[in-house]
Image 1 (tube, rainbow, N blue to C red):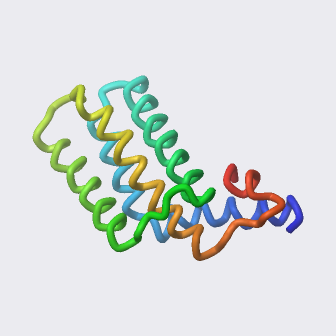
Image 2: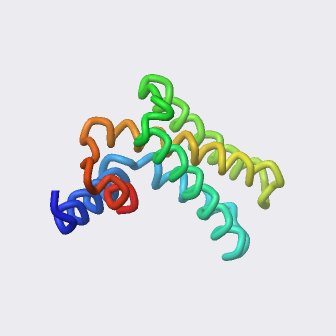
Amino acid sequence: MLFTHVLQKYVQLGFTHVLPFGFDHVLFILCLFLLSTNLKSLVLQCTLFTLAHSITLILAACDVIAPSAAIVEPIIALSTLYAAIENILHQRLTQWRIGLIFLFGLVHGMGFANALKHIGLPGENRISALLF
């Protein structure tokens, strides 16, 4: 697969994973935004989430882990529900939320890994496809 085709296909897959198919990700990020009192805390949370998401995505793509959609998808929904409830119960960011954001990012990454399992990754441009 040519590099330009990899770029187009996997960037598009990333976007469609979020909109329209990944509304749970949008809700989760919205929950992060709603409890953040400043830009620094929001960037920290989004960075940790993205880092964790990338870790499990790479591990699954390299067949180190094999997440089950039947387990992962309900946990993704529960993580979003938890973040929403925490927003209602707390007025500001708590210490444990940072760790939970990372853990939730790991789970959300497994959800995207399941989507990639159905699409597949090109052998010759695997790293590029993952980055895009």
